[in-house]
Amino acid sequence: MDGTVLLTGAGGRVGEAVLQGLSEEYYWRLLFHNPPDEQPDHEYLIGDVDDMDDVREAMAGVDAVIHLAGDPRPDAPWESVIQHNIHGTHNMYEAAAEEDVGRFVFASSNHAVGSYETPDRTPDMYRPEDDFLLDGTELPRPGNHYGISKATGEIIGRYYHDEHDMAVCNIRIGNLTRDHPPIDYERGQAMWLSYPDCAHIHRCALEADYGFEIVYGISDNDRKYYSIERAKEALDYDPQDNSAEWNGDDHVADTDREWA
Image (spheres, rainbow, N blue to C red):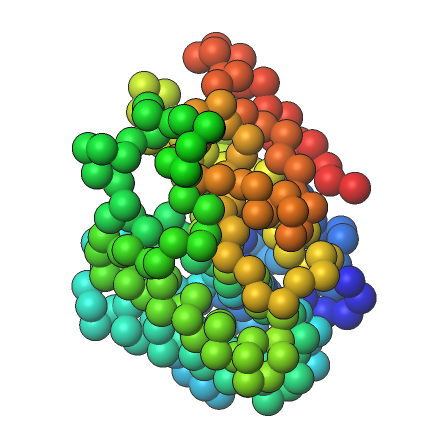
């Protein structure tokens, strides 16, 4: 993809992973909620996605968006997710439509479907031969206000895709950790997303040819709760890490790996 990519929420963990893997791949414009601790290597602004003036300034002249900003707390109160996650995401899409931005990548979350996790549907019951895995075709089933906001963001994206022919990819991000998968935490291992695989799936979302997609952002873990088949098919996603290969002493995932 040629042109400028706007990355919101650049100071968060997902933003760190994306820039760690893709910093040299694109011309970036970064939007921070708070001033960064260190001077970024790319053009940046300080602003809020719930402020339309800030959003329009950040959006001017960009060609694609990776929208990560919002209140990331699973226990975020309703007033906060309304303002920062739902209203802020709508502002982002509206400004993108005004600028004729052709591609919008939205950081959704496993929390958009969190209430599918019941005693009868858990990662330790993974059965590849049946329909146990969630694959993105299921209806949203959020388990908290944060999940409601992410499911709403997906629906907002559906509208802007249909009304403005904008390519929209919703990545339901799993359990992103910087160095290794959670130890002695089965659910976290099943949902693990390594930093290199996080950067890779966002690069795929910027490069692939699609209309509207909902995919799961996890590594290729032996135990899974979510399917990555749609991400492979629609985005050509090829994850290289696997939480089962972590032995507790040496991290086999190459966190310095660069994606071509």
